[in-house]
Amino acid sequence: MNDEIKFEVPSLSSSAMLVELQISTWTARKKDKRASANVTDNNNAERGTATVNKKLLGKCNELDAIQKFAANARVAHYGMTMPWSDLGQRLLTTEMYFDYHKAMTKLQQEYEGLCNYFISNYSFEIAQAHSRLGNLFNHNDYPSPESIIDKFRFKIAYLPLPEFGDFRVDVGKEGTQLLQDHYRDYYTSQVEVAMGDLWKRLYTCLDNMSERLREPTHEEQNSKRKVTKTGSLVFRDSLVENMIGMLDMLKTCNVTGDSQMEAMRMQLDNVLHGITPDALREDSLLRAETKKAVDKAIADLPSLDL
Image 1 (cartoon, rainbow, N blue to C red):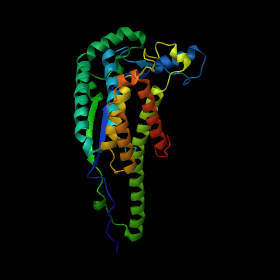
Image 2 (image 1 turned 45 degrees about the horizontal axis):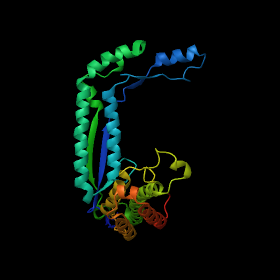
Image 3 (image 1 turned 180 degrees about the horizontal axis):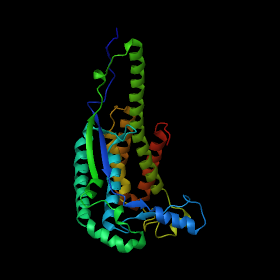
Image 4 (image 1 turned 90 degrees about the vertical axis):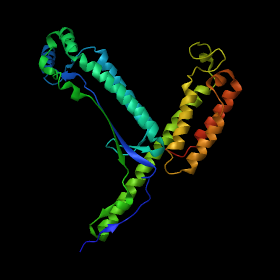
């Protein structure tokens, strides 16, 4: 007789969820077998050693805009979430949910607007491509106007984290113990990856700030493009803005309640309190003190594969 065992492991299900973002675009690229064969034959090469890939619409600004927008939307998605699984699911804290949903819904609407504009001009773009591609044009390469809409997708799916208490198995006591150990190890490792990702993001921000706040070299001092009139290295306002945003992430995404992470956040919050980009540019002493504090924070980071 098999035993049904119910086991519990500490869970993040009340403070975080999984989110999956699916964005697809039409690449408008296709291999031209005939042109590829011509290239190899004309160069006395073996078939298959060279490939000709056509841009079916040539230079199409509307499609380029969609593809760039999709890439930027993915970056925004990654910035507000943490890694979880190889299947594309990311960890989203409940505290970040409303900001994430608001931002991504806005991006979704903008994406759909770009796609609708492109689709409305699709037939015209095919006609333009005919003249752009010359003998490489093949009308059979193009999806029909009715089906081209299916090439574009922007979908957000929210999923609950598995509840450990509801994990039931029916494989006997020995099998249950093995599965329980495996499940604990997997969950622990995924949480470590997610929290490690936060530390790595923090390191990137700190390292960038440290680099931009250093004193310019002699060669850099003679370059107007690299040094401001006040003698600091040129940097954008986003240097400080990104660091403040990173501190917000450390607060909202510290799902394990890591005391070291919270202490680091408070330490850096005190360092940056009241500091503006212009103040850093104009005050060499403030730059030096801030860089010293940033370098100390880097030294205090936990040992990670950075």
